Image (tube, rainbow, N blue to C red; front, side, top):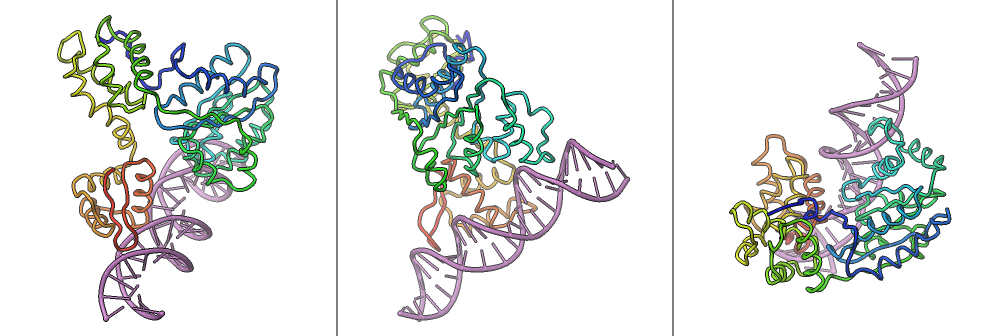
Length: 333
DNA sequence: GTTCCACCGGAAACGGGGGAAC
DNA sequence: GTTCCCCCGTTTCCGGTGGAAC
């Protein structure tokens, strides 16, 4: 059934993109000065999850690199690399100057100094989930580098600017803004159809089934591709050559759940235990939640640390809090 | 209106861990 | 081997907030 599993991954960057011509044009224009050896304008891409922001940024920068030839690029996911140090490390990595940087002994200033000394070809850095940065000053660090151009990606523009001080927001306030909207059902079906063509045997899935997947994904291409991948695996396991409506129905929960599951797997042992307490207990008040957590571990973290964990889970949209003060409760989203 | 209490989250301090320098 | 340096997760401290009880 599956002929090329890579194209069924949401991260896969296709050779051609669909339904985003205008966005590609605007981003290309912002980065156009790079062709002449000058840094591009800072671009700020924003819009809902699964609207193709990351895919379009990588596609456009990749195409630019092919055109220019001598140019560097690096993709940094600020969700994973959220400290100032880690972002600088990733940026240095993109130009091959991070090999002897050690997480626990190299000072941040040393990283900045190395970047300042960089005088190679123009360098485009894509900072995805940029609103997740712990310290947005790293944007200013990069802004000041002479031949680095930035493409910033965020779900919510307001949240990004809310974190910035006046100096930063005035610098980035004039960025080229590119708004992405959710995909329509037809657009999603078209995207899924292309992925099925590249990654599955011929006639493995019909339009009706793709429309069903697109409908369940509600405009989110990442979820849609996840459901298609799950459906393909399920059909393979069942030994059939075609993805039926039934298989799609069975695959929707797992497909939707994938992003959440991946996040939970990255949690520490204590964070997972806390999450499982909420899974088992349902809506719970903070005090009771802490007591239940303590019952399950030998060496519990402090209440303050648990608040940090809950705050992190809230940020990841796994947990929601309702009410204030004594009436506050936590529950799974 | 006042007091009490549970909770929140910022700031600073602490300590583990790992590499560099000697 | 020892000391120093630095990042980062955790802890401690504490002021602020808002609902409940009186």
